[in-house]
Length: 139
Image: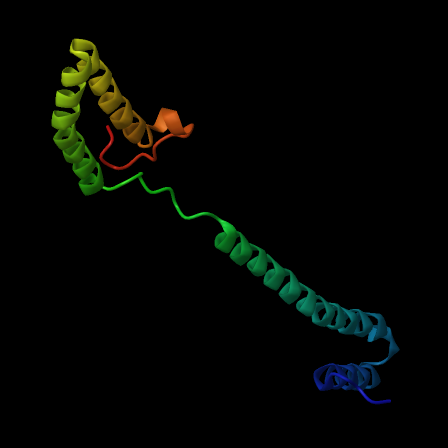
């Protein structure tokens, strides 16, 4: 008989030797002790597999999770959009007044306000359907 695990083989030999020295009255205690060692040995790879699978699931979840939501655009991007909007407002207003009078001016400014409102709506938490993350600076 060839043992696959030399450590278990040594444990079995030690158990048999102890049985020979102690006698048959300790046989059940020795057998129980050896069986506990075998069960622990068999459970160890299962525990390792369970831990490995759990770690793999956590890694997969971390990889598939989307990156934390970043505010839509930085301050510089929003500021630049506002400046460009105001710069373009001057010729649009002039064109609107020249072609349609006060009604053209109102339509031009409604368009400018609408474009800026849509751009700003990306940063509004209620427009996205989720709450803005709180920070330590919030009261």
